[in-house]
Amino acid sequence: MRIRRTLALAAATAALATGLAAAPAAADKSNPSPGEVSAAAWTPTTTLSAAPIRECYAASCDVVIRTNAGETVYWSHYAYNDYGNRWYYVEYTFGNGYPKTVHGWIYCGNVTAPC
Image (cartoon, rainbow, N blue to C red; front, side):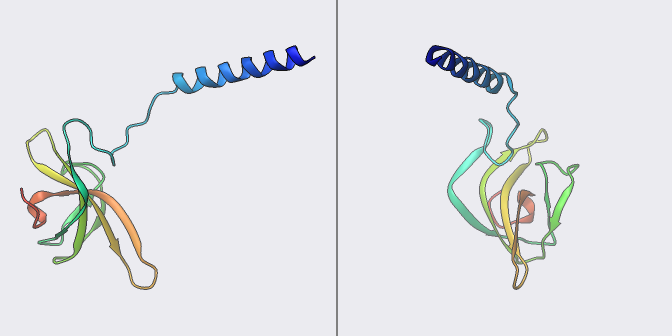
């Protein structure tokens, strides 16, 4: 009986491990890929205009939220899109009483961080 239980446990473990290994990994846009550059920590920068924060680093990507000029956002890394434009991955917190935090990409020309 003990052998049967041990074999069943081993088979279940192998099936689980095989299922996990076969599952495709989802792309995580929040972590830098080899073409992106990371900062040591979240670095503050200021928006220069009512700039959109987007889902990816291209002007064609959907807008997550628009900031106002003079807002503080924090960037963790940046990437260059197919056109050679630098985009920062940012964290933006807004709202009074019940603050909300969003993450996304902002074009370097819309912030005080270097382009």
